[in-house]
Image (cartoon, rainbow, N blue to C red; front, side, top):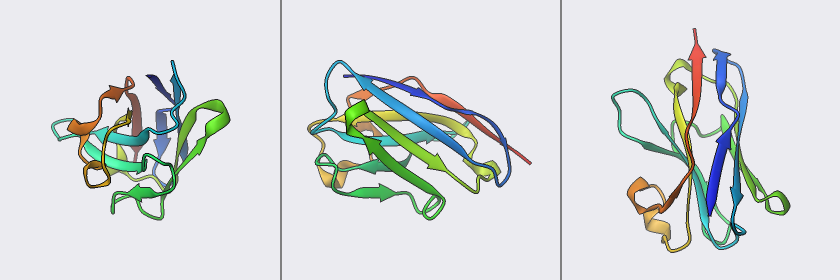
Length: 125
């Protein structure tokens, strides 16, 4: 499966952005889908994601109640709606997928086999 992330940009503190991750090559049914981010000099961190069956969503504590992950199965696309953005949300955001990962591994980026190119989100103060 190929992943293409888009939607990043420059936004002011308190603003919103919506990222998209389009999957091609095959349907993402049965794949855990996730968003990660990596700020300069920091390790890649989990932001939000779906379980493999799509029935459960997970969020990092730092983005709960501000970010929402959703999916459109017909379009094979996963979205990340980001509201109330903060300067510390500045990072390159990546989407990832894997069809063998188990629930306990969902937040571990090394467990994902498929990655899209990142999209840069910059939150200015």
